[in-house]
Image (cartoon, rainbow, N blue to C red; front, side, top):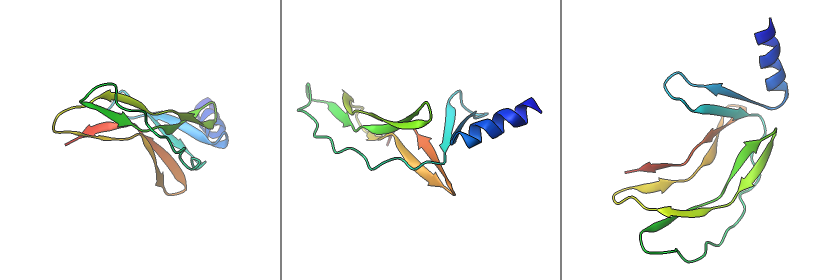
Length: 101
């Protein structure tokens, strides 16, 4: 009964974080769409071989909070897929950024 109340409370608060079985990460699903992304003008890279990771909205204490972009060392043969939100039915799912071939 306590578990049902906890889950119901989290859903009413507009979001829930559930651990997935195959990963140590926490999945974030919310019922609130993220705002329109902030337009950032990246400064020049600190040195060759760095790539810009654009900013994104994170979910903090029941609200979307902007996290500014930053440079990071590139990986030859890979491209950076930025952090983003995906709509899944009536919910929004947060996907962390990752390197893709």
